Image 1 (tube, rainbow, N blue to C red):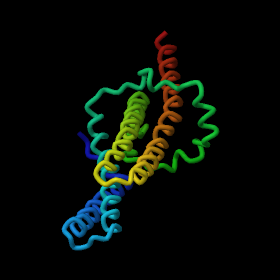
Image 2 (spheres, helix red, strand yellow):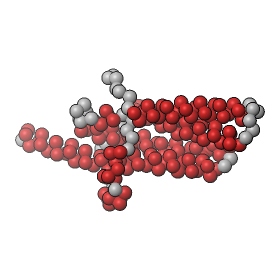
Image 3 (cartoon, rainbow, N blue to C red):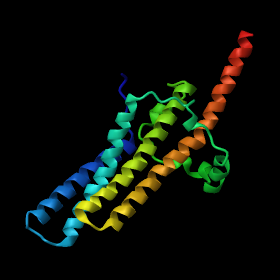
Image 4 (cartoon, rainbow, N blue to C red):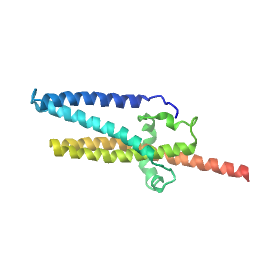
Length: 192
């Protein structure tokens, strides 16, 4: 397996995880160890823990979904009738290239075929759908710490964050699929 260069997005995620782990450990030791009973210390730890959970869960599940064969031709990945109009309203074309990409090299036309890229896009979309569920699981933390509304806001923001990546994959993939179909038609003409 070829080594890949770690992207700036991946480095950012790992740095956030490391910082969140450190802040949550210090905060929890201070609060639960009886050194500081200030609620702000507890909630700093809880917030850092929740951030770490969101990021770490995404990395773990991104690796888990590698175990499954994901095919861009599956009906789930087909463009729906309403999507083109939705993407115009959301102005996806203007902002899609500004989003973070965890492993941008996987989308390289120089290194991968259009079909491989379409499958990678479908895997990325799947990852972000799984992340939507992970976001909702943070609501369970309210059972431990209370303050349901804080975890509801956290889940909502995380779901919006992942939603942008689902939209980007669903916006771009039909264009790649059309290019695949054009390529197949050209090959068929040459063979005829």
